[in-house]
Length: 224
Image (cartoon, rainbow, N blue to C red; front, top):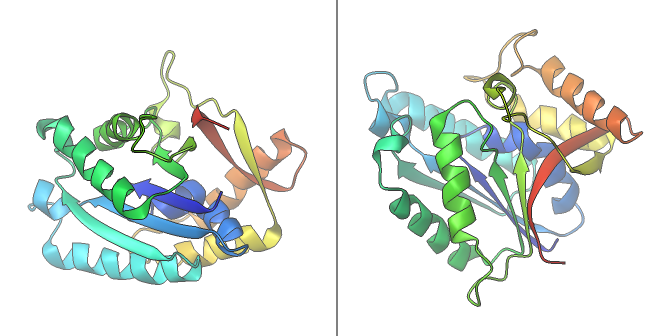
């Protein structure tokens, strides 16, 4: 992996889903970009004020600095009513981002997630990342987001990882340090979006491969 793009439906999904992997690869010279695709104020201004979105985006800037993210981009797709928005427009936006960044690897939310905007962004990303002559994408991985992925469980709808990224104590330390910048989002254990929640999932995924820590993914495309 030389150029990585992480597609996040909301600010903090990138840290929860693959913050340890982002830090691991950025530290060895990978160029990592993150695109936060939705603006909840546009989708539901009665629930999410402009000031709240501004605050969360400021938190995202601080969080991604800790992970050494090279490019942090914000877009304004209308969460949480993305299901009322033409999917081709979502795919076209992602395609424009791919042309701009030219990644060889992308990380996307899981289609198993509970919220519809995660599912739509997954589907749109797979449309945009099709292996055509204009794409140089070699790998697409779907990440699990604490609470979103695990609350989306149903028949034939369980996240089933087949790729694991072994992480060090330092990788997890910086993932948690990054998440602490999301003061408006962090919760207390046993809520999944907590520091202990991050540790617990990383330990569980690590245990699956004989490591102390890991992040897990589903391979959606591998052209190696």
